[in-house]
Each structure stands twice: as structure tokens, then as C-alpha cells.
Length: 300
Ligand code: R5P
Image (cartoon, rainbow, N blue to C red; front, side, top):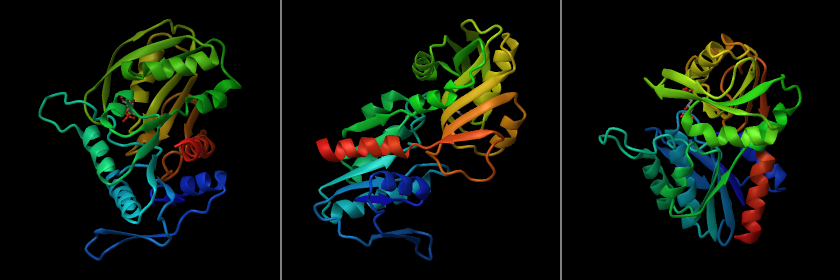
């Protein structure tokens, strides 16, 4: 059985269609005091239940709804309950930089386990280290092959795949391998939640059209800083951006519009809010996720 939270019902419905399953009926509402109220309107006893919920911004409401759906399914006697979380929020908070912060990524993992989920399926989680926070299996899918396929036609010559920070280098390498292109890395450090500073670029980028590959675009600050550094390092101003999760918070859309971006490719992991950036191509991830859920349903 597939259940969908309210954060991205279109994706939930698309995954259900791919699996030839109906979306299980639920009540997702609020009490007058704004507490969430969840009720399953279908029998889950003995069933293998997948709860689809992306933790797009603001993450707290979808997270709590996901926990409540998991708890309801577990207490309803489901044989196994799997959280399908295309965008796993809080994964960026995977270490305590100052020692005076929570380990939020770990706490979210604990909450999901506590709610009764026995497995997690997620897409391009910010840091692979987050898997270590879970004592249950984490099926880590990647949309990079889908993004690379979407980019393959119409690549400028010569092009270079660029990671906008050191942490994303492996992701960019995977994309570069698929496109048979060289890789470069921008050295970024975060100044505030929405501003970043760049210290330099490693790799040969002069005269190349950059393809910036990242896990997410939130405020657009990282992309803006990377584009500035790449153009300064001699890249052509014919920029492509590919990122799995389009959070696009604050003035991200306007920020991106000011940049010389020729192609912008993301996925539908997070439901779009507001007008999309100019020229955005959204690749559907439902077939990728449905294939993973079918594997889990058949092989445990
Ligand atoms: C950070 O390490 C991530 O991989 C992204 O680069 C970052 O979170 C994007 O956020 P923003 O668009 O706000 O710079």
C-alpha cells in the first residue's frame, strides 16, 4: 500500500501510478489549535506500507506528518513501514561545527526510527555520511543519471562539470563520468544561511562552458557564487545548472534569473511553489523511486 503525505501529493500520485497502486485514503488535517491530525482510512494490517513524503521547506510540518503517518501504520499492524523521503531535510546538519549545536541530521533519523519506520528510501541525500545515522536500511537513490541524460543533448564544446563545493565533488564526478567530461571544484565556505564565499577553483576551466552539479538549490547563493568564480576563472558565460532538489526559497528565482544560465535542470522531488525559474526543466523521479519500491517489496 502506498500512502502520501501532503507535501508533494503529485509525486505520491505519480509513484502510485508507476506501481499500479491506488494512493491509500487518509485524513490529514489540523485540530483548531493547529496540532496535526492524521487518520488512515484503509486497513493496513499485514501490509507492506510505503509512506511518500518529501521534506520540502518549511520541513517541520511534513516531517511531523510523516512521523504521524508512520506511527499510524505501525500501530495499525502493517507488516513493514517504509518512509519514502525524496528530499531528506536536515541532512546538511550532519556535524557539530562549534560544539554548541544539535546533531540535527541524527535526531531526524532517530525520530523516523522511533515512529516505526523499518526502512528509508531517499534521493541524493546531502551527505552519504547521513546513512550512518540510521540503524535501519537507507536505500540511497540518485537522480544524477536522470539529470545527466537530460543534459546529454546540446552540450556546449568544450564543457566541464563543476562541483560548487568540496562536499559535492563525488556527485559531480559521477555526472562527469556519465557525460565523459572533465571535473572541476569550486572551493566554497558558507558565510550565512544565504551567502557563501569562494576561495578559488581547482581544475582546468578556462574557455569551457560550466555544468554546475549540486544536490539542491535553496537560496541560490551557492550557484551565484560558483558562477561568479567560474567566469572569473575564465569559463564561458554559458552556464548549465543541474541540481536534484529545487527548494528555491526566498528570492532564489530572481537570483538565478540574474545569472547567465542557459539550462537549468532539476527534478520534481520537491513540489514547486510559485513561478519556476526561466527555462527550468523538471525531470520526473517517480519511475526511479517506483522501481526501488518494487525491488524492496519483492526482495525485502
Ligand atoms: C551545500 O553544501 C549544498 O550542497 C548546497 O550547495 C547548498 O545547500 C545550496 O544552498 P543555497 O542555494 O542556499 O546556497
